[in-house]
Image (cartoon, rainbow, N blue to C red; front, side, top):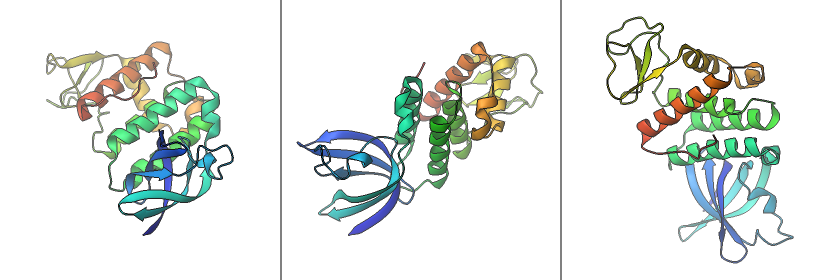
Length: 237
């Protein structure tokens, strides 16, 4: 059976002498694994399509339960991400999040968000963490974990200076409703989260949160990810 999918390479590992085993995140079928035969050879025709971040149209032959990539038409390889060490680590973290949260079911919202994030990371001069943080916020929202409310999730009290994030429920609470699973969040951190959520990817280069707020935002999203999904992504701090 022959299948054509639009896909982004999440991971590529050595397989046999000259082959690669790719983990693809596809628009049509979610996450799948497929091999590329002979692609490690110096003159291999498809070697350009075996690298992480490559976005293309992959033709896959399935024989006896094994997926083999036979043709690829590259749409965008996002190669410039690999030229900057900070962008590379941030990009790897984005791919890692997708790999950990995706399965064999299509997720169009996540696929579109991934393309937007990689484009911003590759082609924009964005401060470190911003694209990754924006991506995580959109993933939380798309999965039903939106939490940027100005009211306490427990009592409905309007939040102002004393705001806490309840890791157990993934929402903000007031000082009266906090418990031992809550961490205090500064106004700068909350404002940073709101700015990131409301700013489109193409406008992120104009955003400046300030050093302390940047780290606090990243750390909060890191903790929220771990509590929501019982997994850790590749760290970029």
